[in-house]
Each structure stands twice: as structure tokens, then as C-alpha cells.
Length: 166
Image 1 (cartoon, helix red, strand yellow):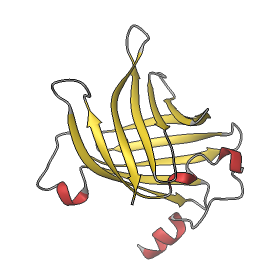
Image 2: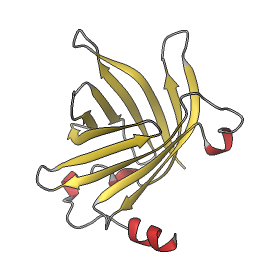
Image 3: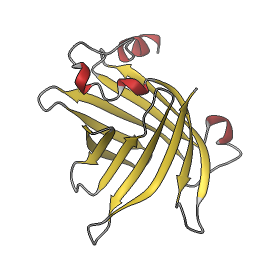
Image 4: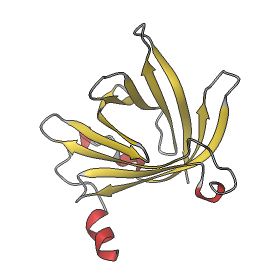
């Protein structure tokens, strides 16, 4: 496995990604987060998780591993919708956006990521009815939301998390 890791993981961003389009490099590292699901309802819950980002594929992509609940809590705090998932975000020089594939047990989502002011908006590419948004980004924290389009064309936050750098 050593050789696989050596050819997958990169130490830095590729020079093929202009600095203005380097949306995800700022997340490289290890993060702890609090997941807030069903916010404001009787089913609201708060779960601790971890999110680890790294440059991959000669620095042309950022891959993450999303773990919720935390690895140390997964055995005793099992959640029916627990996630041990990965996302690959690869820069697309033709569009200046990021092609994204998120996958977890039982499914995958394809998105496109781009800057929107101080936010990074990732929109599902087929139906365009899901957005995953990074906002309130600092060097030590960020907010992430899963926002869905309702039948009446309004957008609603289904879940969010608040991450802090380890």
C-alpha cells in the first residue's frame, strides 16, 4: 500500500491550478466538526465528526475523508445514517471550476464547485436541486451546509456543520 499512497497523495498544489481558483487547498489538513441535523425540529441532533483533506493526483485534486460520528465513537455511538465517505474535487482548467464526486456506502453525488463571493458553492450537476456550501471560512474554522431545493423552488438548509482545525 505504500506505493499506492505515494502516487495518490501530493505534498502541494499543482502549478496548473491558478491561485485565484485554489478553492480547496485552504482545507488541507485535519478538522473536527459538530454536525447539526434536522435543526429546529424535535428530531434535531448534534454529532461529533472528523474531516481530513489532502492534495492528491499530482496536486490537481483535493480528496477528503468524511467520518461521522468520530472513529472512536462509531462503535458505541452507532448512527443509522453514519458516514465514512470520500470526496474528490479535481480542478477543471477548461471551466475554471472544480469537478466533484462524493461517494459513500449506497450512493454517489456529482457536483461542480465554484466561488460565490466569500463562499464556495457546490451544486449537484444533474437536477441542480442540491447545494453544498462552505462559508464563514477562516484559517481555523468553517461552516458547511447541505441546502436542498423544495418543490416550491425555495431553498432550505437540511443540515450543517461547524468545523475547527485540529
